[in-house]
Image (cartoon, rainbow, N blue to C red; front, side):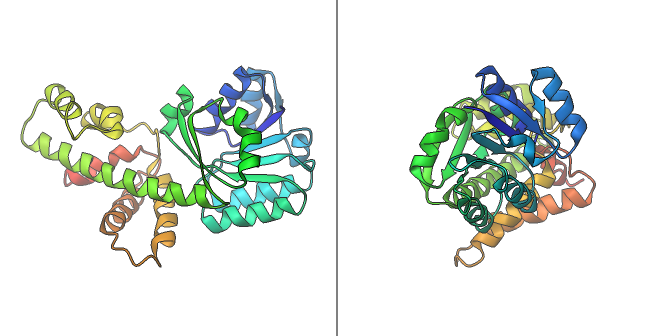
Length: 284
């Protein structure tokens, strides 16, 4: 199965490497051409310069930032991919964007799976992502061997858009955990607790979670190299807010997280890791 991948950021580049290890990667593309050229040279695959370079792919994987990026790529690919091929979108976008993309591709006989992921840059590097897929079950089965190159779990959540709806739920939980962990650790600092004893003690009990495990030590050292950027979290939470707006639910955790990540971006920390949230909790 020939696979192309568009979007070579913190998630896309390791995904491409996993696909290459499986012998599936044919072509890579990126908005910044130099990044595509460098990875293509490293992996000895083609670097795309236009959608035409994906014409021989049976599957094209998208891992881009914004809704408009997804639609632009989908519209371009619709004119070059063969009928029966599939576009898999790992971006986090709105449910409406996923449905719009699926409709545009279906007009050309091309399948579509909205398949946002969770697990962060570490999950991508380790091939342990959780994939939340929406779309036709048969189309998902067709591309499952591709997803298995970098996923620990692949879940079919329902029709097109269900993957993005699941990611919205995921991001509410992630945002809430981040708020609690950063607030708790800031309190631990104020109380003078030794982080080398505090962190393993917390992880051994009911407070244990991925964010505390993966980011606790670095945030206490004020090291915020991005695994997942604040700007991306803010973008995701705005999508969640739009999805939740008409639900009638009370979402104070979501609203607090939106305010906090907006403040971090305003402070020039958009490219820092989400664990930089602790700087707000410290009162700085």
